[in-house]
Image 1 (cartoon, helix red, strand yellow):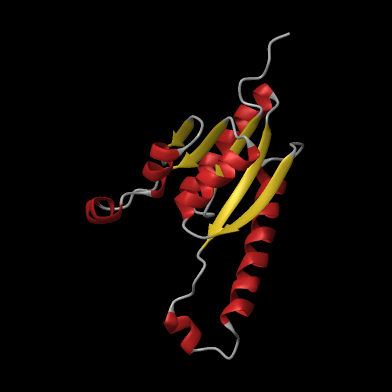
Image 2: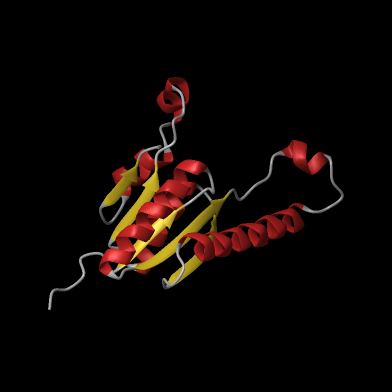
Length: 148
């Protein structure tokens, strides 16, 4: 009996269409080889001052609500796109690429499946993409799913 090459697949998502394509791709892969799937959403650890200026809630209250909304959204994605799979949903807070790489190490991910956003040249030239940064620092292979 052969051992599954990818037993744990990490799928970072920002809930955008390109990242949903990556979730679908990971689901097909998990179907074929019986992998466990970890969905993760990384949220910022600070809110823009403009948002804080227009609310009586504290930053922590707003972040807590965002965290809970993100967790529920991940559960909904798992229910809709990964029925019948063992799926963990994890919300992290911080710099997206750093949190994705750290989580991949923590869970012993064998593969990261993520979408590629079609940002313009200027954004890419100034900041690079999250996907590109993960590619450079990931402790395992990264499968990049292009936009369909």
